[in-house]
Length: 243
Image 1: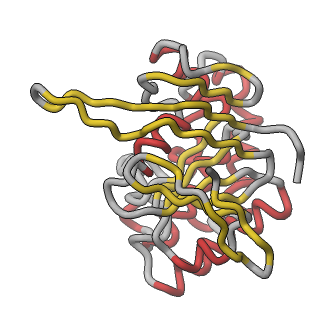
Image 2: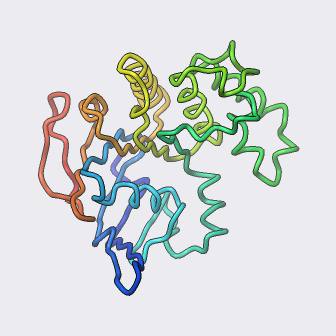
């Protein structure tokens, strides 16, 4: 495993106002993830997993603490600057797919790149990359299909290709197998494992799926906004639970 960190959180807190009260969703979280890791975050509902992913994905800002991504401090940036970081360095795979229903498969995959100011100058290269990613995830015959013409597994494959189109440094997956049947879930998991193994894509999952946990390099368990220290055996290795 590489010795340097792709992402590093130090003392991250996230508080929300709830009427006259303050609710602490994250309480002093420290976490480092190296390039090429396949890391899983587990924990009960309300433990802070989604809040953690939102901060890692630059969708939200911490109340306090430091967040370094790919060697840059991003935790102190405003939301416009975070949107730029997100578009350049982070890919998302959502539980509910979040595809645009009026766009076909190719258009959904290329959408993050089309949002860039210089997208018009690279149109041909972008379409070539879309076709290559569609082939990699088994969607070449469906490039001109709309999302409602696809199965759940095919929609999730579109979401995976869309997450990879910007060649991100980090891919975040929020319960990516939760809405899929067991056979399709295994196919999606196998695909992500292959992308991690063959292309070195760094994945960080939030999941309750034991099949995903089983294949993790490392399992990070959350409880009440904190990371719980300890260790779990994974694939015959000792996988640290971050403390």
